[in-house]
Amino acid sequence: MDQKTVREIFVRLRKENADPTTELHYTTPFELMIAVILSAHSTDKGVNKITETLFKAANTPEKILAMGETKLKKAIQSIGLYNSKAAHIMEACKILVEKFDSQLPNTREGLESLPGVGRKSANVLLNTIFGEHLIGVDTHIFRVSNRTGLAEGKTPLAVEQKLMEVIPNEFKLHAHHWLVLHGRYICTAKKPKCPACLISDLCEYKEKEER
Image (cartoon, rainbow, N blue to C red; front, side, top):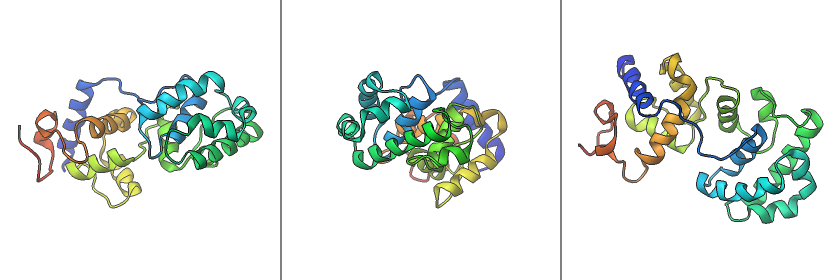
């Protein structure tokens, strides 16, 4: 895909949604970190249902630690992998208190030192909270990038690197959220909604359904 086409894709996405953001509900950086950890292999809708109650009871590292792992598991048991997520959250809270004065670190190294926070999650947090031009390649972005021809790659890291290479700087702040939302609602996994897609004519997907 040539640079002119790449640029036009993001011009259209920006025109459709000038100020996109995450669909995870949060009011503090710490709350978003918890929501991001919980969102692995889970829907944002399911996570928001849990955190609506959880954050009323405990929305700081100290309060989560005071709650204890058993109660935390009970609070998040409606989503997948809740046992391991609870263990990760408890350990992450302990590290935040002991090493980061209970504040979310603003570096990749600091974020990835927290259990449950890998490269993708660190990118999401650095982008959404700290405004860094980074992209966390999840299943939606991986699919959209490969299917459209925007950034083809066999691994999330390869796709991330290609996206950072081809996306013009003026679009990088919001690129993550535009691509996630496009994959979630239009370029869906089983049956993409090509007739409703605003970049369908720019897409290289060979099996796309014409308008």
